[in-house]
Length: 518
Image (cartoon, rainbow, N blue to C red; front, side, top):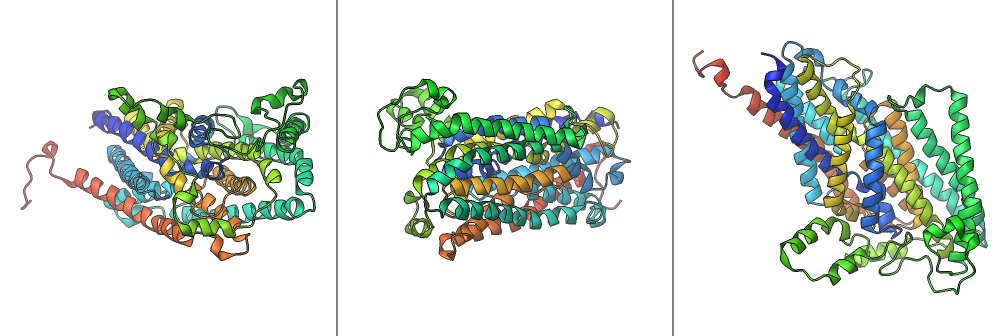
């Protein structure tokens, strides 16, 4: 019986892959922008708008490398060579196990690893189909233990990188006699370095369709340095003069006016020019929530609009609305010069976008890896080879699902990963995002499907420890998060294995009547 007979598996795979992508957007995308929202650099709806673009582009342009690892390194494709449709069914069951686990965790506001869920779900159906020996456990062959190793060193790398960046900022800039002066002088260099890192990732990671990684090393170096210098020049010519007028001069300048600030005459200063107020923020986006509440809630359309925009307007950054413990934790954290901190708001948007781009490249594999296997078998009626190019529409499909999940449900995890773990300021958020992004970059290039949740949590933990006071960390929230990580893999595997066993081993009319004595 040909694999094309099982078109219904492909259709169900499409549906369930979307829900798996939805869960990834609802749970993991918060990793990228939770720090920016927690520090009130961005409002929730602005973070969702930016992340929707960066996540989709990361998945669409750079998502192919990691997909190959999950698809081929966990189960042994040769075990399904005689019956490829069984692998189709197994991958469908893995999507059920992963999506149910992740969406359920998102409902509870529990940040979990979608990579754990995907790997656990594939292990679950693999054991149900051919036993434990069918699973590629070997570290040397980039199997399960190779992936597990990434779960250990990725948060450590992210934490060390983030803490190093933050301590450099702390002692080189913020502990000086005039921290604002030292910070604004250093901003162009930080712009250049951040842009060079982003360029290196995009070029080094490469895309099979752009062939960027086929260039000679010296060309890659020239591209990174050139773009870094361009951003440094932007910092000198545009950002620094604009920010100095806005922060020190308290002039009411808009963000877009930095591109032609020299044409704008000096304006009368106002209080708190850059500090976000009720109804405003660093990107001058206004207050969507206030406008929404001012609109009378009448009719079915108004009710639908209220539900549809709940994920964009929810309050996730006001720690005062939580409990006294969180307020005490924040009060104990070390604070720095407010004007110097303000200069990092724009940089935090830049690094959040980079982290989101890297996340889209890395985590889209969790949803489209199983779908790409289903699609290949459906098209060719055979087990896919070790290297198969992922279709563009599959990458786009996964990116759209991630965006929808973020917009409708991402606020729950942003609230959990934000101010409930430690105090967030723009400089701290910048350091956390750089550390987490560097870790994800290395993982994406080497093909290790690491957990971005663990990367950002490790970065947040290490930066929190830089306060020098254990009371500045939300240990209860960290313990709950770690407990969720431990449960994710076995729960997803159990669901996937049970669904596969029910579908594969139930009586079938195709094979005749069930006879217990046979």
